[in-house]
Length: 82
Image (cartoon, rainbow, N blue to C red; front, top):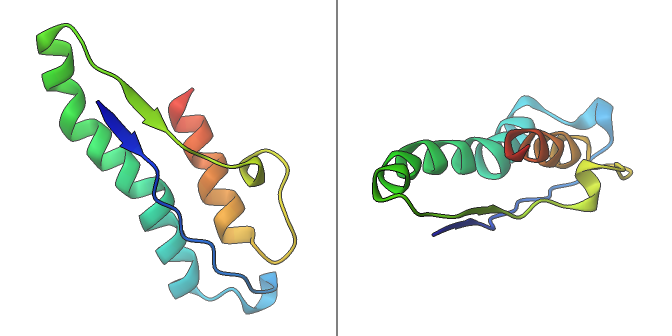
């Protein structure tokens, strides 16, 4: 079983959301779950059993002020899960 439960939520207005903040949010909240899932899913399939649980946030559905990178990364995680 894999549980992707990491989360990084830095806040800044959109105009002040730098590339570094954006990349950290995407790396922790979306890229890491993707890469871990991709690495472990084949072994789960081979065994015929496995579970991947991705923990997202209502921010991925609704959005919140000053957290565009976090909201986008969690929306991406919801899409990846679907």
